[in-house]
Length: 261
Image (cartoon, rainbow, N blue to C red; front, side, top):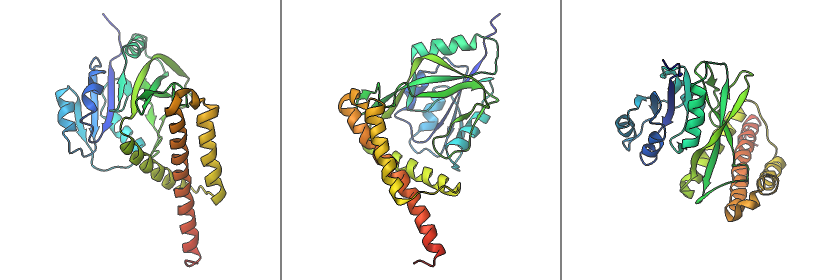
């Protein structure tokens, strides 16, 4: 009799009807699929249900970290695979995951290497590959509370890298990608501001220039061709938006304390 550990795939989603079918097909072999919907109006819950997912709903949004925590709470199996609707599990990665599930239960977490799509090219450099993310883990682990750039709290456990890629359709539509970047930058700035972080005027530009140099040179973005150069600019722009938003929050707070002077 097989002692394979059963697996719950967990997703959070909103208005992902165009992405969801291919994503769910790539994990159709899992023992359970949980999808937490955040008020979709494009039929996302119905599509998920047709693909055999258990669908739950939450219209309140408290950030990505807490949303993942809530979604995971609906899972019933001991192992969790957390993915996004714009990600796909490749056959090689599935084989690596299945090999883990065949092993006796252990207090280990596993990272997956992502291949990120940017303007028609799966990047090989620029800091976007292998872009490891910790997504396969026993259910007693959980995500932190960060509003954006949330991560799994590993509590000191070792992280094992699995073979195989998780395809990530990061930037299929540049305008939509930019709007998401703006939202991330705003959420990042608000979170840091409430944590008491400060940002002076000149550090806005030092961080921005640093992001461009790091992507293009230190992370060999130039080897990704035209997309590598464009991504370096995009990363610099995102960094500029983050730190300018934080500076603006600090500045407006300081002005208010001085009576608007």
